[in-house]
Length: 219
Image (tube, rainbow, N blue to C red):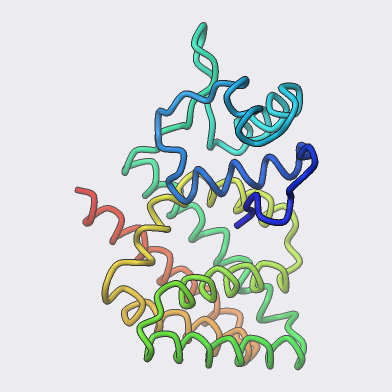
């Protein structure tokens, strides 16, 4: 996640503001339905109001911010039902990516995923939920990158941003990493084995289980 650390002493670019504001929304610093006042954000993030306006426009496209007539911008609240639907759509798209990744993966990339599997196992054994969550995100990102499916990647990025608050909390629930670890290992094994059908099924099963947990946890 992008933070203000390391950006001291200069005005932030639009791209930097998008990353910082996205991280603030995902991490809960900016909460659902919170008003986003351009003047206040410009002062807090040391940026021009023009850059703040452009960053909010980008986050509106991503579905993290919404414009309300005569009231300006606010953090968009995503319902449980919408978060489940988004995750189910992601399951279909990421299953496609897993299938393509299994067809395309190189030996070097397979070694990288196998090393990631070791780190995930170690994180679960140590009870390090933050490290596991980071590796989880890395795995999904690398499978998408290896698949070389640019249209799917762009769509997944937008969808993930909208429901990420639910998944962010889910990944840190006690006991959740131990449940999802075998699912992630199944994805890695199938992709590395060049088994497109198994890779697609493993990814679908994993993300549909995430949708089920979001549905049951927030019912």
